[in-house]
Amino acid sequence: MNGPPLNIAASHVGTRALGPGVRSVVWVQGCPFHCAGCVSPGWIPDRPARQVQPAELAAELLADPRVSGLTLSGGEPMGQAAGLAELVRAAREIRDVSIICFTGHRLERLRTRPPGPGVPALLAAVDVLIDGLYVAALNDGRGLRGSSNQRVHHLTSRLADRGHDFDHGPRTAEIAVSGPEALLIGVPPNGLLNAFDTAVDAVRARTSPGREHHHER
Image (cartoon, rainbow, N blue to C red; front, side, top):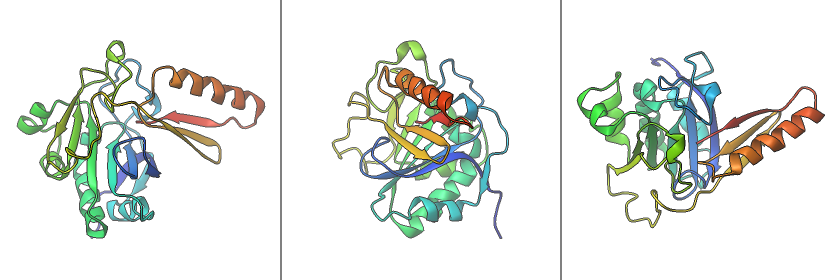
């Protein structure tokens, strides 16, 4: 019997912008933090988006045989930790993927005062956790962190020796267009977000209906 579905804002198969190797990414809907300068404000409200069973989503995310890892973001992944733990379990039945997860919660709080069911199970499945709230004034334009106060925790050694500099490496971003939607995938290098918004607004002004756009990390 299937459990409750995941409520996801978006997903994307095959990116090199969110960790080492070719990865697929899922962004959950809903976040309790409301960080100033959030790049995806439309994904903050806790409202229905796409409802999908974890096993079904796992098959979608691993449809590309090049995919060697999953990146979990949002929104706030720990708000749907039980479903994401099931997603990882189902994905690893298909392929032994690595897992990177973003969260606004600090690791210490997740371990001592989990904010919801499934957090210990998800932490046990994650290889790299990037924790802490986004602070726009501390966005130094480097690494997979959104701002320098955020921390990179290698919860396993799996990705520690892959040569990927999570803290200080250059940022990359990709733009995916599907129908009326444009997605900016990755932690945007400084200046790219404004350029992306300007370009999308220009397209929107010339088309009807306008193209929707989201900023992803």
